[in-house]
Length: 317
Figure 1 (cartoon, rainbow, N blue to C red):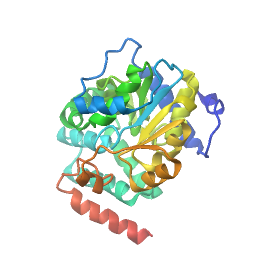
Figure 2 (cartoon, rainbow, N blue to C red):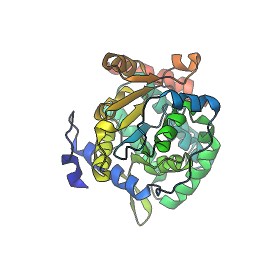
Figure 3 (cartoon, rainbow, N blue to C red):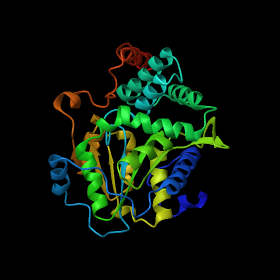
Figure 4 (tube, rainbow, N blue to C red):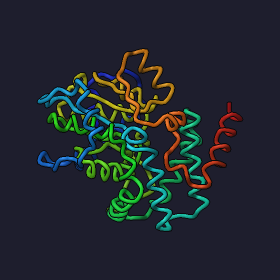
């Protein structure tokens, strides 16, 4: 996989860790890809079908085209890793104070809109410490239960319809997310998608070591994962589509010929309008006013954590 990064040109630089994370995600995605005879996705509502029928894209029968969907607030309301954390907390994987900390870290990232390296390192270490020493198979089994409990009812019908349109056109569809690849793969499988690119946590003998392969699949690393997978699968990126809500995914969106801004944050909306990218917004007016705040933020501790996050951001500025 190491050579794949040279097969297609990069439009913006990436660190060595981003490349490593992207290529690891692409390799994991190919291993977990559903076979071509996979069953069709879940039934869609009338409004969701209408959204798909409105789109002039995708082109039916174009086998060198594919679609890449961000997960959080694009396909699903809120952050997958937060919902997963709620499920692990319910199963006593960690204490309430850690849930509080985990919740406000998610809110801080969405509200501040910037990545403080020290803060991101802390968030990453917290998540890895939770799964360290547990078997991959155990987390996969629990992940299936957590999907049913917290995620299944949070899928945006409109985005789901867009993904189904690509599948119906005979194209492959991958999720691309900073969430653990195991969690992303479960969601992709439940939605009838081809597979998922996600953050790869190191495991030895089927047990998590508490370390990552490269870095979280975020920002430039997502673009590297898409690039590596496209090279391995013989895709033409100019004929591919990508969908996201976040300006952090501009590297991935810029990589393809058909970028879409879905439920976009302010920066992505501005960027998309400037470049005449297609936009879709499936939120209600109230939700749209709260761009990016995790939908699961009803946990009691989130309000105080959010205030603390904003205050911390202002002090550091």
